[in-house]
Length: 299
Image (cartoon, rainbow, N blue to C red; front, side, top):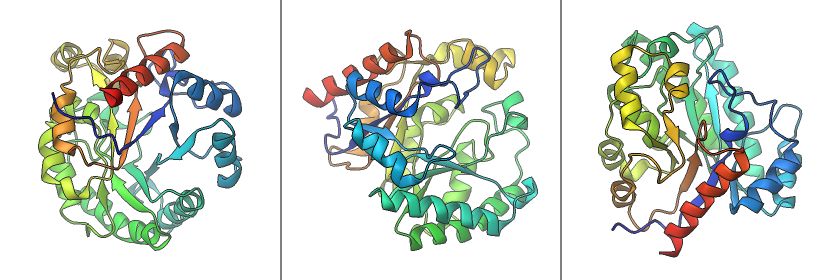
């Protein structure tokens, strides 16, 4: 049995609280932030994925997290490319502003991914690299060359987060971007669940870019749902509603392979996510995640 990386920061991204009956995420439906943070601490977590809510200064939001006895852990931001109607200059400022907030709270890396909108073409035909276009990827690279440098100048390293539905979805697209952006300004923040959904062996890419991995998003899933959904041509939301995700340790992913790939000395961030829990209410799903992680650490 592979050793869990005990030096890693283990955080929860409490997506269970935001999952809608339609298979989306609604950031407005969770409890008030102080109440939510207190629940996450009570469930057994010591760190939380940090996402600055609208209307909150980073310092104020960080204080809410710390008042609950939690530590802020690196979160995720999405970015657009000029083809989406957003200039490179706007994206540079988006990265810089978030980096300033992250640095203020003591974090040194941040997960980044091309924006996934509700009308995204790849949500209709997910996980197969639909509408692939190297010219679009070149635009992603140009944006990241400027935006990542602005973030690094503030002391925060962006780490690329492949995601189903985004323009960086497949192994080929992930490599295309990783191989063209300076490692000094772009790290790697893989998601084992989204990679597996896209038919990618996450261990292969983690091993390939091991020296650039600063954090991972950790999911468990049902492989039969992936296979059946691909065969039936289900959309992103239909696949989620078919029961794709489950609490860690309850699905089909072999986590021992992940621990081996990361190495026992991995000291980055592990963010546990269940986009749509199988245990209700959300608090019980989060508690099951915490128990699983804490048992691994204690083994």
